[in-house]
Every structure is written in C-alpha cells, then in structure tokens.
Length: 420
Image 1 (cartoon, helix red, strand yellow):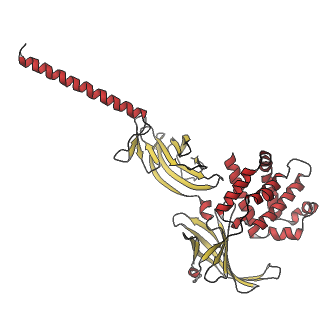
Image 2 (tube, rainbow, N blue to C red):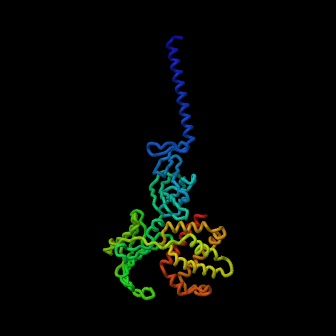
Image 3 (cartoon, rainbow, N blue to C red):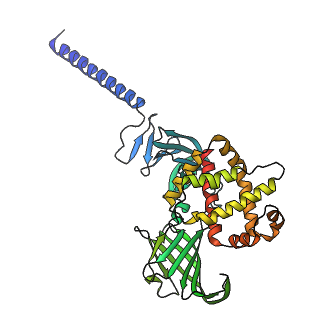
C-alpha cells in the first residue's frame, strides 16, 4: 500500500473520531436541558421548556407555548396570599373560551398556572389575588386568541389593584385643612365598587351647604369620577333631621384624587372653587381585637339557629350588631389596623365559637338588614326583646351605621372565604 493511500485512510479515521465526539457532546447537552426546568432566556425574549418546546415570553409573568397551544403565568407570591383563576362567565363580547389546566403554589413563593383553549375566538383569563382576609388586592386580565383549540396569541393584558382596595383609599371621613369647616364623608356600597360622597360645609348650627355625588374608581386615570354632582342648601331641625332642602344645581361631573401623602383634591365642573379644598383623613378610634371578639364575634355566635325562640335571638343579636356598628364606626377606622385586629380576633376564637359564628352570621345580618329597612315592620319582635324603638329608628337611618354594618359584612365574608 503506497503512502498516499495510507495518508487518506488516516485522515478519514480522524474525521470519523471527531464526528463521534461531537455527537456525544451534543447528546450530553440535550440530556442536561431535559433535566432542567427552564433553560436560559433566548435572545428574542423566550424560554425553552423542559420538553424542548419553545415558550415566547409576552411579559415578565406571561409565557406562550406555540407548539402546545398553552399559556402559562408565573407570579411571585407572598405568605398568606392566594390567587384564583377564572376563564368564563364574563362579558358577552368574548366568543372564545379557555380553561385552567394546572395551577400550583411552589413553596409559597410563586403562583404558576397553565391554560389551554377549548373554544375558538377571543377568550378572557382573569387572575385575582387575595390576602389572608380574603380581600381582593390585585387583578390581572389577559385576552387570548384561540384557533383550532390552541391559544395562538395574547391580544391584551393588564394588571391593576383590586377595585375594593382602591376605593378603600377614599372611603372614610375627611376635613378640609384650609377652611377647617368642610367635612367630606365617603361610604362604600356592599362590595365597595361605588362610593357615596357627601361634602358638608356648616355655615351655622342649623344651616349648611352640601354637595353629594356617586363616584367610581377609574383605573386608567387613577381617580374617582362622577357625573351626578348636586349642590343644595339645607336647614336642620333641633332633632337633627332635615327641615328644608333647596337644590341649587345638579348634573355636574368631576373627580377626586388621592395623593401619595393621603390627601384628597377635588375638581367639579360647576363648583368653581372646588380645587381650593384640601382634605386630610380623620380616622375613628381603634377597635381592639379583644373588643371585636367580645362585642362582635361572641355576640353573633351566641345566637342559635333552628331552636325555639331563634327569631328573637337573631333580633337581639342584630340590635347588638347595629349598636356595635354605631359605637365602633369601623367604616372609618384605619384600614390596616382594622384588618389586623379583625383577623386576630377571629383567629383567637376557639373552634366551637368559630363554628357557631359561621352558622349564625348570615341570619343575623339578614335580620339587621330587615330592621334597618323597616324598623316599624319588625316592631313586634323588637318589642318582645325590649328594644327601644326610637333608638332603633334613629340608628337604622344613619349612613355611618349602615356603612359600618356593610364594612363588618364585607370583612366577615372575606375571612369566611379565606377559611374555606
């Protein structure tokens, strides 16, 4: 065999060895990728999943897998928080439908959930974050496009604080720092989505100027807007009831904004000097956890359902609830203090009281609502428990008492939901 043939054969053997080595290293790298949960983020903002498929990163918490047609969210999670996912039953203009495949909380540090398409069109995915009290803290909304049963793209996404959380920033009592004569009270409805606002300027003991409106939070403009502003001059009787009311104008529009320093400014289309008001918060005194336990939770737990005299016991507990709402003014407490004390009170209850409270509270609140709506219609049962009808009528008509009852029901529903 001549030297030329030998050299050619040696070169071929070396090349073959290099190919084998390269293939071995490639297989090792592929095995490493299979064992990893997520590899490095690619240059175009995506990730390679464990199965080797590619995930496009839409934003820092949304990932779309085009091969499987699934969408995944990954969101950091703090202790005591939990997310809930909803995918249908909302606005009529969503013709598509998605469904939740899997969700998990990984070591209480991340919420991960995956979704797939089950009906072609545009579908809505809504994620709601709740705190330990079951109160909505944040909402994340995703609109996805679905074709052939696969999620093919993200049309829209947004994240914003829960409406109740935003509205709670305005709910309460405020005083104008400039004049020291104007007081604004803001009450929330049962789910705190709409706010009743009243600004009272006392010109004398029996006369005042009053502005009223119904405001609603606008997430895009981060302000509370209204379109039903009314201005009236009011005279009061010695009993505190309205004697005369003269409406000067109505139908104004405007908004309120809450600053980082927790002051409120006002702008109204008809009240030219509205921008001169500068409201600062006035909080009600703190209700301690012990007071919540003794005067709220234990009182309702003592009302027995399905027994002889249950209606009288409910009426008695409802009257004590109304009295507690009046005395505590919880609607105007510092929100963080209210939530901490309310939760601490509930967690301090023994299992028996918790169970009886859970069984009774809805019936007691229903009775309280019936009393507030028509005290005279409940006169027979109220007379049987020795209630003072004048006091019941007076408290039932007051907005601050109604607001406190709504606040107690709101936080109670939240804590019951969180416990389930």
